Image 1 (cartoon, one colour):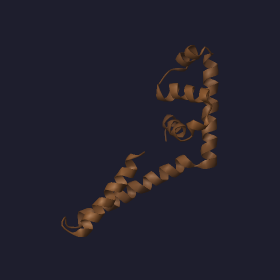
Image 2 (cartoon, one colour):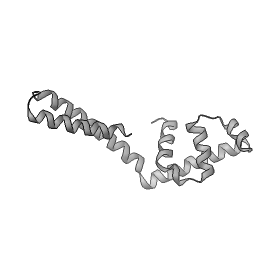
Image 3 (cartoon, one colour):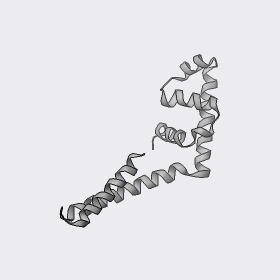
Image 4 (tube, one colour):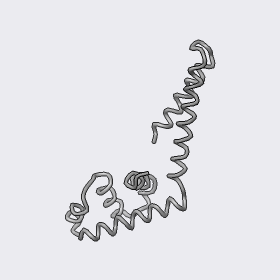
Length: 119
């Protein structure tokens, strides 16, 4: 997984555990796409201070993931849901439209698609 995407996901899961300042800087850099220089100017600190805070915050997020594993669990669940959904699609195609089993399979597939959409 690309580092930028991974950091964004880690921030989604654990960002609330960071200090307000860490959250603000992480949000500006990763979500608002500000440069370190822009953040440094806005916060009246050096670019190096922004770099250090981002690096430290990212390390903190990775430590939380190492201990709690919420992101990995989420990614595993999403992969399983997509696999189940594909299997249900194959099953639905093999059951005639008017058959009661087709209705149930379609309902289950719809619910799984809702779960996948919450990523």
